[in-house]
Amino acid sequence: MKHKDPETTSSAGAPRRSRVELWAPFLVLAVVAAVVWASFWSDSAVDEVASDRSDASQATPASDASGEPDRSGGDDGGAGDRSRSAGAEPEHAEPEQLEESVRRFRAAQRRLAARVSRQVKVVERRIEPFEFQVASYNVLGDSHTGPGGNKPGYPDAGPRMDMSIAALRNNGIDVVGFQEFEQSQYGMFSSRAGEYSLYPGMALGNKSVRFNIAWRSDVFRMVEAHTLTIPYAGGSRIAMPVVLLESISTGRRAWFANFHNPADTPNLGNNARWRAEAAAIEVAHLTELHQAEGVPVIATGDYNERAEIFCRFTAGGVFTAAAGGSSAGGCAPPPSMQVDWVFGSTGVAFTGYAVTGTGQASDHSMVHATATLTGDDGETALLPDTDTDTEGDGEGDGE
Image (cartoon, rainbow, N blue to C red; front, side, top):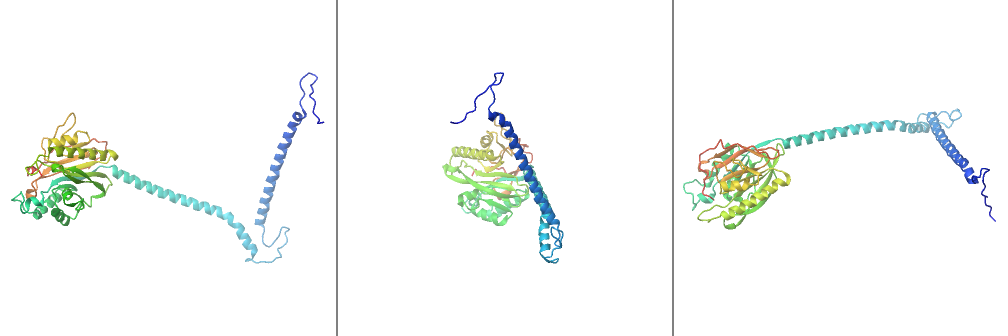
């Protein structure tokens, strides 16, 4: 029969504690004492080992633990010296490693500081205003003045191209949108004005070559490019260029687009419908480009409209015209207008707008202005047409 501790009560009638309850405090004290003793013993052992190692490192090869000379032999080149050298390495390794770590850390700090400094300079360049000259110029296609052309009395395309290049250089034009820039004229310009790069060149064939954009290669470089297909006379579709250019000196970027909307002529008929459709496509696409990343947009072109195209471009409050005018509270076109235009989105300011005749180089004047990429939130500064050159009527033949 198993023994069971009886429950007892004190003389006061309170329950008496069991043996486990009585012995529990003593057991706890015993365990604590054992842990303290074990910890003390472990620390002592560690100290003894450390002391032994210290003594061993201080001992010379010529004596042993008893102070007796080391009779095992060995000179300065013996095993004792090698043992001592091996034992000395850890003492010097940590300071050397620490010094190397500090050296690497400081070098990394210097590299980081230099990198941050370069990035700051890049950001500063990309937000500071950047100024350049932009133009739109219908050069009068070679076919108009060649055999069977409808512009008798004008020189052939060769002399006219020389005059056109001179006009660009004399006015310091950095970016120009051409219209009626036919294949032969592209070849002439490329060989005679090597300071300019072009897009699309001849890459898209004889139709799209007529709308090339040219820029000075020492001012801008092309980042990317695409085309926008719009309706021309009778609704036929033609791809026209859109390029993203970057300033070589500052890194500032802007989109440039160049268009030629169809005219009303006896040969082409009435194209008001196609001009309206083309303008809607152009404005929508360029607005989307600008709003996607906030990159400024500049559009050049022979739009074959005056007040109508001004109102179409400026209605949304995104674009303004280098020629002036206002869209605040309604459409108020500038007092003097050509069929050739330069428009800019918010972030572009125009000054010095001019209409420069080029003699018999073309039946269109060259319209141009100083464009400034302001980097602001869209408050575009515009000045009225104060430098207009009245030579040439800018009317053209409407093509």
